[in-house]
Amino acid sequence: MSKKMGYIVIGYGILLAVLAVALQQVAPALAKVSSITCLTAAGLSVLWGIMGLAGHKQRAWAVLTLAPTAFVLLSQVVQAWFVAASSTPEGFTGPLLLTALLLLTMGMLVYLMHGDRSPEFYRLGSTQRNHSKSGTEMTPPDEGKDS
Image (cartoon, rainbow, N blue to C red):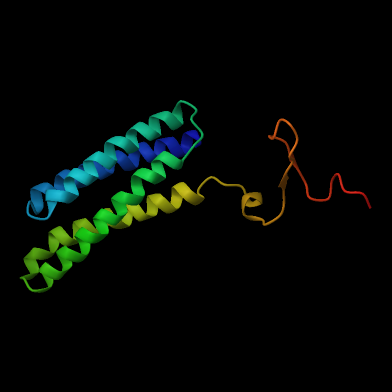
């Protein structure tokens, strides 16, 4: 994780916490599960962002935090829109806020998985692992072959 990504993950965590508190104020009935999930994910996102700023290169923990958060939010969004469809137009604020939380989380997941990657990362077969004793060297596929 780069420092830029670390700052973005911290910003996402803070924004998620603010929106979760706003959801709790706007629609307390919808916020029972969602606010706990979002506040937990926000705290962990800030932690992963700080670890990224400290030099931790792995993104796996951040992705493993946001994937279940997205599933919980998706279930809450579907439930909220079913209830809102049968209510008055004033009842759309909570589902809209929940939908914004879901879209924000899904966008962050996509960014964590694909952001800050070089174009070579996506080329199939561009590099192969050398199975030497160290196991850390990378060689192009044509090197080391007898012609």
